[in-house]
Image (cartoon, rainbow, N blue to C red; front, side, top):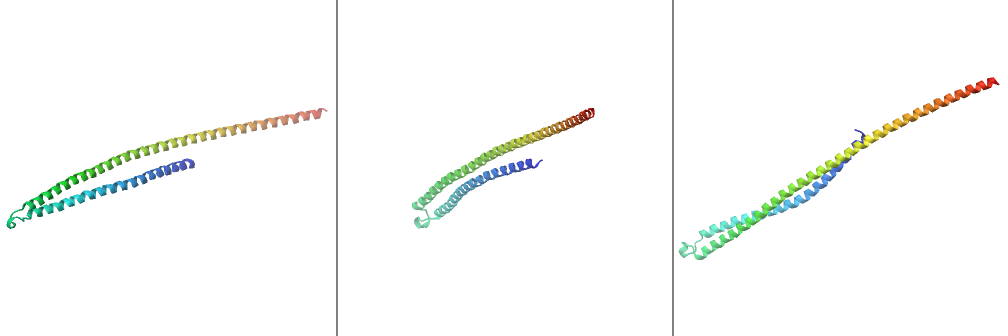
Length: 189
């Protein structure tokens, strides 16, 4: 490889790495935002699960409470408190399902985004490779053109050298003949 082709390949490599770095930087920024959203949603689900556990503890306590006659039976108020706690647990369970669905949707959207980004990166890499290939082909074509021009220049200089040599030989012959003729004319007189 000549120095020019090495420099061209090096420049193309740096261009490719630079563009790829910009793409990764953009990915890192958007990825951290989506990770934060996922973590926030996961914490919401965990809080709801902890609240559910707490409410079940309250429900167990309400079942043990017997404020009826002589503390042997459950009063209507005790049963109503247990029922209210169960209603709160059901509402909390519904919220858990909703928040879990949101969490799964976030996870699915992340997966789809990663697939889309992978496809985009593949397309970009393919485009970069095509560009590099085109530039390498153009570089090879220009090298061939330079070699052809150098050969033509070498041929032209060979023809010029041959022409100058023939011209000098002819001038030498003309001078020789002229001196020979002059010498004959001088001896005739």
